[in-house]
Length: 229
Image 1 (cartoon, helix red, strand yellow):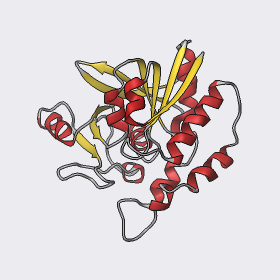
Image 2 (cartoon, rainbow, N blue to C red):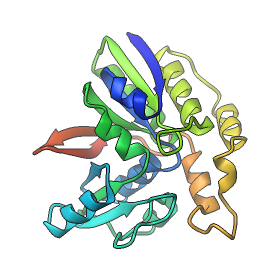
Image 3 (spheres, rainbow, N blue to C red):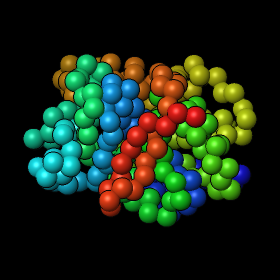
Image 4 (tube, rainbow, N blue to C red):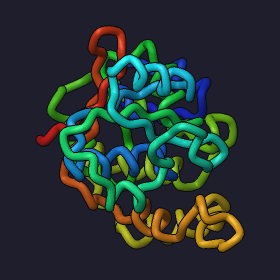
């Protein structure tokens, strides 16, 4: 198995083989929580307007996501795992739009198979990838809005690569590296309540969920569901 680590939106566009699009803060942590709360599926879209249009047309029941960390007007939820952890989303179809994770997923048109990656689902994602017996795996660290590399996504990509190689990385060491990064320091400031400390804690809880986020094309849409391996 050849494993390639790439970054940002250009990396998503280059990605081939089995592709894992990583967004720790917060897209694929929030998606994992929503699925664990019983959401049936999550439709991933690049733009806010797409999400609202799909809800209007009855394709989705709820919209969640963010622009600049803030819930867009008209959305039901922000891109916040702590918010989704207490939400009633059982059996619902959610449409998610963020500025990194879902944009990267939409850009990964060269993928043979797609997964949403975060520390919350890291080991489960690796198990799912291994089950495909792929020759090429590309892990894309999306960073801040797909433009600037960030510690949490780069560390998550390295963590999953090491797991794929059969190593057993120390969880607490990885967590400390992420918490030392600039993005992690955004959280917990009363002046920016859209970045709550609870989200940071949930996003750095490695392997808190035992399923992978498998993304497949259905009727022209990118649809995420739980995959247990």
